[in-house]
Length: 349
Ligand SMILES: [Zn+2]
Ligand SMILES: [Zn+2]
Image (cartoon, rainbow, N blue to C red; front, side):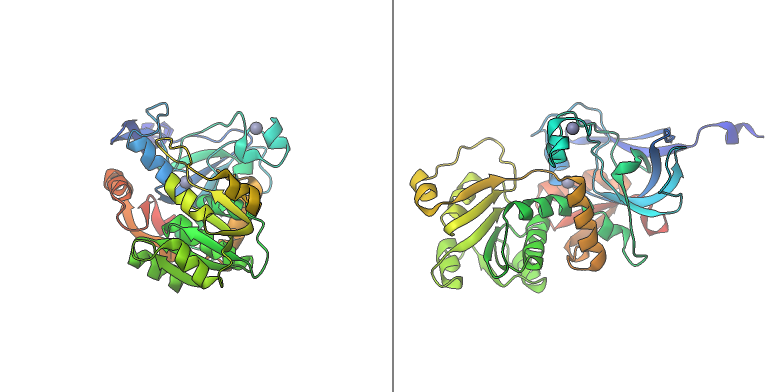
């Protein structure tokens, strides 16, 4: 046996070493433990959360391999893994929940008190516990589509919080990839949806994917447009997918009696809501929020993707090689395009 075949195989990985700078490193390919699975990454989406860390607006321990919106193929499984096999195409959840804390035991694993963040997907291979791996059912599901499982799962959770009934009206503020996914999930629940944004191209995309009404809120007053669409009643639910307190206040003012509002985006820097408490009192409004997702939401999201009930591939505007990750992050930070993806192994995986 030659010396090279004895050496551990290596892989490329992109480490965020400080805000604004990735470093390409060649490191040993990880091996799965008994309960773990090794996957080869095909595509990984750039998440606004990652971009916030990159921009130095959120501090996490560095250096670190981020990237948590990925799909790929299983290459190796640990000795205790039974229901997953090498060769299977999968999507993955990159947050390992403890499974033992109170939130984990009460259907709120998204709020796990002791989550673990293994290396993410801005690299060629990743190791995760088997429970974090979701096999794709349909051969026709692309890796690019499956890579939307995690962000769509967050959206699914956000929509569940709003308890929509068929025929109700929902307002979605923000027509980025997240807002357009909210619109599609709300439509699956039987709601009619108004989407508001400042960019006409995004609104056109929202309309082409099913939005009932679109509003350019730079050109029309949002509340007037909402009242016109709903016969003067207001919307039954609203989700604010943009991190801005004034938009939350504006959306709350568009709610009908009994309306529910989800603050879906984190707001940085912190900006307290300037809201009339009597509005909440007399109209019996419910203000809620949602963050991340549970394993159930992940499963629901993957079903929506695989069934084509939520169309995600039209939301991709750029696919860049993993080496060009810095360029991808600049696009996200400059709000260019829609979903930016990095190609790691690509469709050949
Ligand atoms: Zn994300
Ligand atoms: Zn937990």
